[in-house]
Amino acid sequence: MPDRDGSDPSPTVDPEPAESGSLEPPTGPRRILIALYAIFALAATARGIVQIATTFASAPLAYVLSLFSGIVYIAATVGLSTSRTWSRRLALSACGTELVGVLLIGAASLIDPAAFPHDTVWSRFGSGYGFFPLLLPLLGLLWLRQTRPESDR
Amino acid sequence: MIGPFAYSVLIAGLLLAGWAGIWAWMDKPTGEALMIAVIILEVALVVQSALALLRLGSAHLAEPVTFIAYAAGILAPLPFGFQLARIERTKWGSLTLASTALVAAVMTLRLLQIWRAPGA
Figure 1 (cartoon, chains in turn purple, yellow):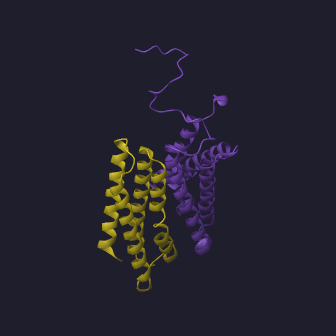
Figure 2: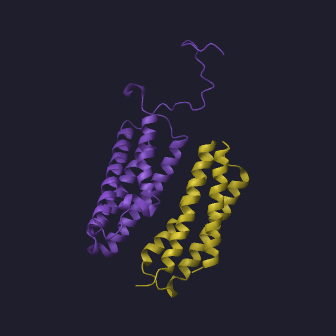
């Protein structure tokens, strides 16, 4: 065993070098998050716009929720893909909003299906989208936790 | 619509996702053969969307706007994953490509479902 005290400045065997937060350009797992978020942002926003433009009167709540979730996904995508001072805060609040939204709407749609006759992205915890709406904010928050700057620990 | 063709695209998308997924599993960045396969699948997707939109007039769809949105949107994920996999020369690039190929496959399935949906 090589001596590994604090004076050793070469942690070359570390398989997962810790990314040092939001000021780095996007790499590694962050790219997958950005890709998935961008796709969901597109899908949910397009869905919301189509629904509101074609059949708004039949389920205004569900369709406004679709559009809202799309906007939150856009915010998360921007927060994850940029490296500004506000990026982490934006990503954090967007992922948090998503998690609360998918849990609330998911539970509400199961408890009172009559109130949600028209599916949204978040209905039944996102089962219409392979539960990705539930998984994405968890992955996003996990990534933000993994990469939080030293000063926050 | 274009049943057999769309099913071939669907299976090809799943195979491609599996291929890229195995590459990620083996800790490898995407190779040249994989990238060529992505281009071929994207061309197939363009053909599929073109055929679908050309035959739109003769079909009775419940949600034509949604169908058109899917037919156009389905072309986006693969080039996006391709580009990210080119920048990210690690297993994460392979995994990104795998996930976008999976999205393309799922969107093909949705296209088929919307086409089949009884016209209301």
